[in-house]
Image (cartoon, rainbow, N blue to C red):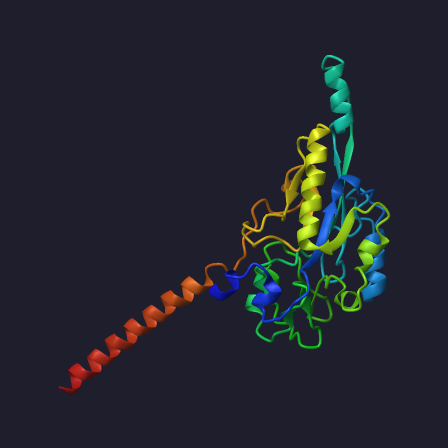
Length: 288
């Protein structure tokens, strides 16, 4: 990640696009997700993603477990032995009577399309590139399967396909965006849990939704990946969560893994220069 990149708020502009369209992204409101998996199916059908998750895992209704080369959308099912917010309010009104409530947290996870994307920084072939919409896409015909991007992703999203070796992940349906269509997952979502649009508008919408939930007594509601000042410069796909990020399998404070590369290379250059000066001095001393 170069210093010049950090100076730009818009990643498409930083990548050299002139008169780029508004940055597009996802806002996923997990409070209205019903776990129908329509997004998973739509993603696979449109992008020809190989089937997976046909075997029961024993992890509740979660048969795909997490994001991977063959799972670009993953719907998590999290069962909690605690009352739902409405039940908690009712309990408080009844003098604190206890109950044995159970609530489900459901969330459709996806590539975050980071503002500062480490996968782009480490790719040696240019297979990963930034689109004019600010999203991050893999060109599978350019990928050489080196795998450098896999450990670079702070979210553990990008993955190599078994038997193929190349990396695959969500493209935010780049082919659909270029012709004015919304991504397949957002189109298929029956509750508008997955919302697509200009990122600035989505952030404003998310702020209003968070305020509504707080006013309704849902104190644990929070936005994740919305802040442009976080460790990855904000995400192009961000979420409204009803609990801590760790509950959803998300890192609490993600940081772009290539953040310190410029300083590291500067230290290497200084050390190399010092070695060169030392070697030159020794050579000159011997010559005398």
